[in-house]
Length: 196
Length: 113
View 1 (cartoon, rainbow over the protein chains, first blue to last red):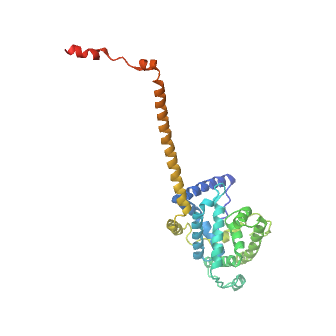
View 2 (cartoon, rainbow over the protein chains, first blue to last red):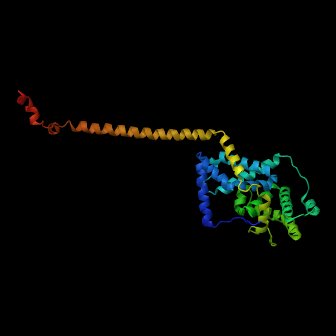
């Protein structure tokens, strides 16, 4: 757990946004190398965001792939005056939410059951793996919009305003979603930290 | 994790963020296989009708520009020829424009005899 949300300074962010907008424009005119560069830059982020909603890694990868392909098809709708990341993450969020809606819900155990059960803790790696499972499980139990809000804010470093635009909801609702998601996840994380 | 979490907290929580990031991280960070898979799928995408029309539009614009250039050159050339014709209607200019032949050329026949 070493990396934190990246919040590049304003100048670097502006340069990056301009660079990615240029890549998107090239990709729009059929430059597959430019599209490949965008996939390279956003693959991990897209897969994480999709997994926040879908839990299963394979489902998340399928949703992320659908999102990249949808973005490629819709590139003519992208406004190059605006940052590319939030535009893409909106498509990823929709793809993951749609996939979750379609798929059969496979719930095994509730978050509280998982916390109470605890289970054997043979070593630190297994303990961490168990925590990761529980965090994913907890995220999966949240409404998709709440999982997305907390992931986009605390993991990916997007602002409330950007998330509001991605999810098509008011900024105040984003704050509320992040708050409720954190409250739920905090219990889980605190339990793990006390057990360390 | 920060204890002062409220709906108005506008700062990301680094501890929770890092924990979630690790939990959500793909098993193959960097994801070369995933990227290859996406790019291969992109290659299989049918070319949208809009793109086809856009390419035709580009070709049409290029052809129109080329035609305009050729037409411009032709019109320019015809114009210059017309100016030259108008200039030669002046009798004085006609006389002035005729070069006097070389005298040695005219007298060559006599010298051979």
